[in-house]
Amino acid sequence: MQSLYEQIQVYLNMEEEIPFKEFNSYYQKVIKELGDSHEQFDEETLWKALFIVENVMSNAEGRAKETKGTEAKKYTKMAQRLQLWAKNFATRLGQAGYTEEDINERFNTMFEEGAPANS
Image (tube, rainbow, N blue to C red):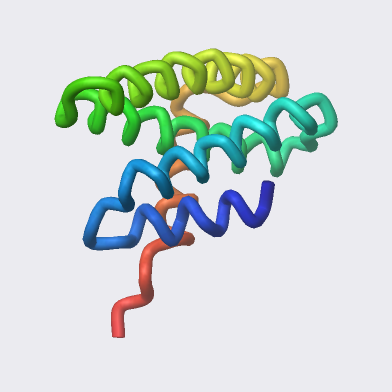
């Protein structure tokens, strides 16, 4: 999950959008990792997984609105599938005692972690 987290940080800081093929490839890696390992995630990994899922889901939703045809449908399906994972992880963090405000604060910190340093 760490390498996927590092990659999402790279994507979030890019000026241009990645093409569908690369987006889909990253999405497939995320889905596979979640399917294979989600039950073993510790708290730190849960945070990273939720961050990844929320960002890919939101990006897929945006792309679904901007594109037409089969790609738009694929983006919509990606977002729907990721929404289930987001609910799963948010529930697990809620059971660990975190509130929605805690999640928002942590996400802001995670965004800052990936932001390029001002030189």
